[in-house]
Length: 281
Length: 182
Image (cartoon, rainbow over all chains, first blue to last red; front, side, top):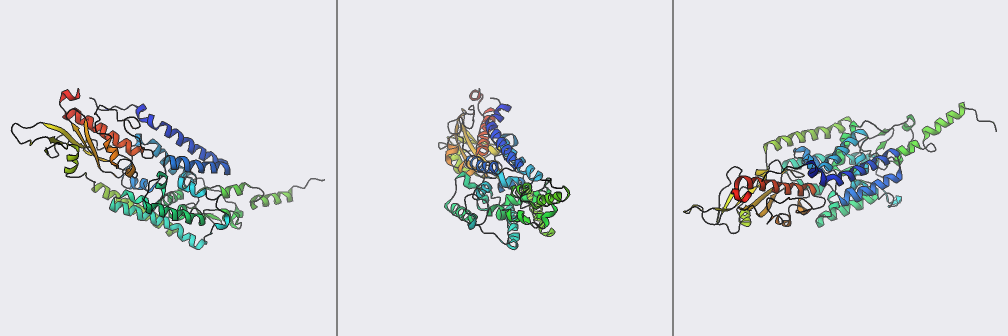
């Protein structure tokens, strides 16, 4: 009996459908992103919850950070969809920012889908002073959970720092109660977990300091507050966009493009009118 | 603000550095004396040889092997982690003790350790290991065909199935009587 010789067909065959669907989903997410389309974004979020979440449970997890920390990675050729997701998460963050958090992550998508459902009145805006500090909790959690893992080698700690296991529908009663509390809190505080607690978001936030293609700001942005008020992620403070908090949701970019709302265009138009004489009636 | 940004970076770099040093120094070893597991794989066995040989294995004997004339082994047990150490699941190797009789039929398998995040619903339930009992090393071990697929845990299941497939084939080729492997 000879040892097993696997052909590329044997290796790729079982992964082909998965790879194709994952690739299609990512491409769709990017189309919505580049078109700045609200409808496509919500379609992406629904697909993220359904396909990436409940169907595949494919989310970048703190377990993946453990794997990098102790150099214990899945075998590449048998885990192509997982590596594709990692390449996308890292690559898109370096190119555009925390796009992964805003569109691909099933849990982030789930909490964002609360936005059109939960009445605006129920949402609590957190004062900037508190928010600034709350943003740092996730970095603390990231360092804490990495340290805990490296000392104990207990992978299963992921269940207590991230709720992504919920998509596998396997959990203890305690875990489900914790999740219910978290989701209830998210009804009042938008994207609570993503903004303040997620260790993976923290890691991608650190990476997003390298982001190449950032959101453009006009000189008018230093006085105008429209985008700052619109941003549901608390990522805009005065003239600055905090890259590590921005998930590229497009809300501010759609305003920039809106020539009726963005002062930049309004001012340009007024200036233009001064020079271009209005046609005679 | 600058320092606020740099502190977590430095801390993470530090903890990663320490972790890699720890990882290099420490390996999680399989159960050193799997007496209970061996008994489950070969309930009829009266004695087992210590873990030895090339490749590393236990021999199961129906009667005391020190008797005269010496008894022939009724089966062989081995760790997948010794036979195919390069095989990794989602997070590291899955430690499986496999028993095989002298004709190449698996008498059982026991998963004793894994660090798979979704191990608790894929390779850890006894149902997973139980399905390999009665299979031959000649079987295809294809997930979704002769090995049950578990959705959301395909990397773990795939790795465990490959580990059992490849290790049983190595043991069959090297340790079973040639007429059983023909």
